[in-house]
Amino acid sequence: MNGEPLIRWDWLVDHLWPIAGRVEQHLYLAGIAVIVGFAISFALATVSIRRRRLYPVVTVLATAAYTIPSFALFAALVAITGISVWTAELPLILYTIILFVPNIVAGFDSVPWDVLDAADGMGYTRGQRWWRVEMPIAVPLVVAGLRLATVSTIGLVTVTAILGDSMGGLGYYILDGYHRHFTTEILVGGVLSIALAGAADITFVLAGRMLTPWAARRTESGRWT
Amino acid sequence: MDLISATVQWLADPAHWQGPNGIPMRLEEHVILSAISLLVAACVALPVGLWIGHSGRFSWWIVGSANAWRALPSFAVIGLLVPFTTIVDPDRGFTLYPTLIAMVVLAGPPILVNAYEGVVGVDRDLVEEARAMGMKERQILTGVEVPIALPVLATGMRSAAVQVIATATLGSTFGFGGLGRYIVLGDANQDTGELFGGVLLVAGLALVTLGLFLLLERGLTSKGLSRRVVE
Image (cartoon, chains in turn orange, yellow):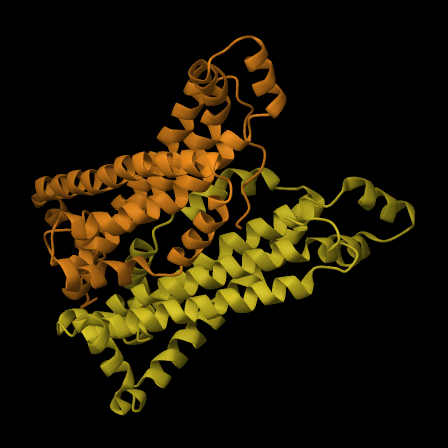
């Protein structure tokens, strides 16, 4: 744009600290959403497993909620609550729940009932059975959900840039660069936020292998439903 | 309820139903952009996914990268395209093309992965039987695998369509029109009626699309298969 070079390295060097600050904000916003979202989802999933009739309701609500664009949710919340950290966090948390719950439920569903029977027969209490039998079997799918939710939350944090300069993480640079026709900023924000999502993805793959060395490598790609 | 009445008032105002910023025009922009990006994505992703599923070649690539594609943030993708599309066309490259290309990128993976998974999921014995009957490879694909995989293919298209319609609103932050424009304008002018009107219109469009695809999927399930429980 404007005959300028695609990237101005001097700007990049001058702004290393602010960029680092935006990376930190990005991880902070995503981190809160994933932790809070995971806690709520675990509770929801546990209830859904116990009370099966609730689960279809949960999935239908989740599908419906996914049709509401994140962008719309952020903007709508501003009109209701004004701009604060929670304006960014509430939609982020909601989307993590949508991704978490089916994975956690699927994880505990993947425990074969004869394994549960065997555990009961061996005299495990409910708590022991949950911790020593159900959890280890469920962990791979739970970690898969954690990975999906974390990576997509990191992506969604960029959208919070529409809430103003005080939010957005690296998305701030994307939007600011667009408004100022300054490609360096766009490239810094875009490349770094994608890199952050990629790094989180790889971290979870490695963590999953360390946590559950007994689990078979995934052989399918996980179709869309 | 201030919010609801403001939204209803905005939606009911005849002035918002005409002209270049009217709801019909914005709806048309939104639908056309979504349809074009879905079509382009399907033209590329469907044949590739079917072929990989049938031949088994390069399947490691789909298995390995499907999740990574799923995680690509659209906001960053639209932004990242701007510096390059403006080189090609300073005008539309700043408003239309980034969103259009990003939506193709967004729609591709669900279509590709489901085409692959659909074909891979077909009972191998059935394929062997077809081969033993003397069917050619292409006949096996079009006559056996695709009909059985059709519901899974349709699910991929449905996911892609709903995602594209919801995400295309992001384009309004980057100069594209569409229904997201009302959200941007409503946010900027602090006009809650316009903002929530926009949100309702986008969510409504996505839900209608979801419903249409669900009906289509029901119709596409082969009669020989519908007795069984299809995932």
